[in-house]
Image: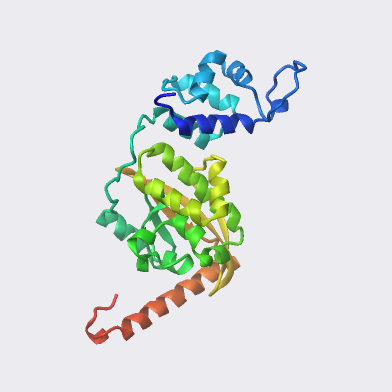
Length: 297
């Protein structure tokens, strides 16, 4: 079948297989279900489209449903907000040619200053494919020293699966690692021809059986806010909350800011980590060559 949107086809098939027929509100027809989930004609009925139309869409044919039709299909399949956005992205993905390299992302100086000014709170800017474009002192102390890594290694998803420190740091590693996988799935809908994303997926698929298994499930997730339980080697257990902000002028860059609730043990642990990190930075500065001639901030 020429010019097939394979990502769309796989996403719809898996979403349909994951639906619970007993919750769909469909009348019983007495037929034995040989496969899990809804039948194609049932999704079509729930969405108010013809079975032939939905079948062609699930086959990855190059058709362009209206926004209303996509909303109806998303409701029929029980897709959440991120799933609906991903569906729209996949339908709009027209590239079927070879992957291509995109320009290297840069953080503009004003955003770099903003991240550094949040000195008491860990802050990161993630770009396409979860590349770590900027991280401040506290983020490097809380998670990993992204600034000291080689540029090709400064990737949040890669760190989650490749670094043993990440597995030890997150109390609920599987939850957050899976979220990283599903965020990459969301990304590939936005940038279907991005060579960097495809290379990262190939690397993690060959490296990690967990990544390989979760990637094959074709689920999506968009990080907006939440919390993480950590087991930090310097300050012990703490819980951090995070909020995300999309950068004006560049929606492919997202600011993550991590905080702790005032008056809690987690807040005290964060303050201790800040003091330790600041002391460590000062020691490194003092031990640098010609340190007496370096400016102090």
